[in-house]
Image (cartoon, rainbow, N blue to C red; front, side, top):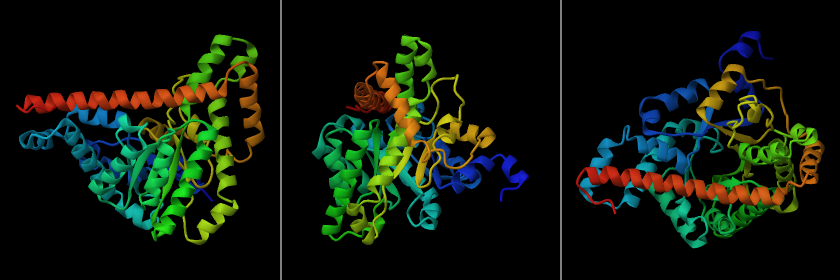
Length: 381
């Protein structure tokens, strides 16, 4: 029973969210955040039990230069390439964050306390290179609580199977469509079967599937606004939640089937759905929308700090808001289709844009590091 004081405490909503079976991960990382004790503080006071990163996050952190001067100077003296410099800096941050989260990792039996690092986004359409990069990142970070992020592109699917099969935990990213999500779950199960055949301990392998939320509303809402009818406008802000809820329905189905039962008997872990891109893009929407409306057991919600703070301040967590909404979710997506907005076209576009955005952010990061290395008298090429 939650007391009034607990309910109105700054982190009361976050505790209620955690109590509903939602793991709260922070969608951000920087060296300053680690060294200042900020990350440790969020774990202590705001129920944060994991961290996700992506190329855009590292571009913002390292591009600022704050906290990286000494390492950049050392890298410059060594005359490393810009790609190696970026790899050394990003893996150092992930390793340090993994150490901060080690107590959470141990207390949760490996379920949480995780830090994710993404393969070079330029490899998103190259299976073999993605697998090789994933192995390299896991070796460089060298922490049991690291997760390697692999995009859910067509080339990424067999890479997921290979990397899981090698006993490496994976965060599958950039999932937008229900069809692709089912392919991701299938790739995970195939990876577990491969790992089992190779003699790996399945209980030590974990995975999450990052299902992107707000970007779906951004694109579909834009098209609904252009239509401008009352029916179209009434559907704004509904498609992303419908998509995510139906993803959870698919998760429940796959991880209760016969194929899963055999793996569960070998102590395998379910691949949890992770709600990504949970910061609202439309200021007309409640800033906690994609937290409050996606509460379901066995999920992860990775939040930008602004969303984390908003949830702590005024989040309204009322229990499971997913499993009872499957019929309405199907109706909402069907209504969007009837208006001539193609779901398949939207999700294909979003996947392509997602990969492209991360490639741009990565190139911006490479450019910033090249400039820093060159300023120290070293050719960063």
